Image 1 (cartoon, one colour):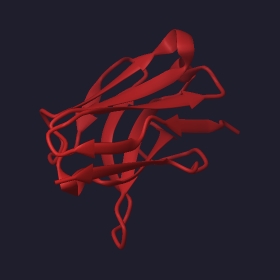
Image 2 (cartoon, rainbow, N blue to C red):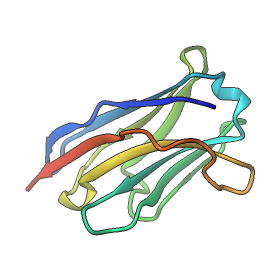
Image 3 (cartoon, rainbow, N blue to C red):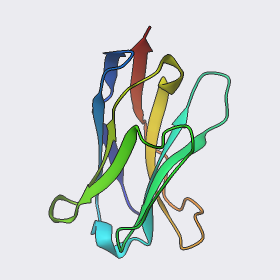
Length: 118
């Protein structure tokens, strides 16, 4: 079973930036897709961005134009560059592989906490 390690979270001011990383224990290109999710307190986990193994990307409307998902295949690592952060971006961010129809298939890790001060 694939193992995932998220990192890069922290405290940022509104308007600031953070870069999250997700390293997989298997070849990242062997996975149909990888995705970032987030969960704020008292809210359900939601999809933030997705990248397929051929490099196509999709973003939730609430991050379009601000966040960028990309991958370093040699490092089996996926990233989420988050710019123009807003307080409502705060939460625990998780990565997970997806199947071809977008269903998460991996175990959920500990995630990485993002806090945005206003």
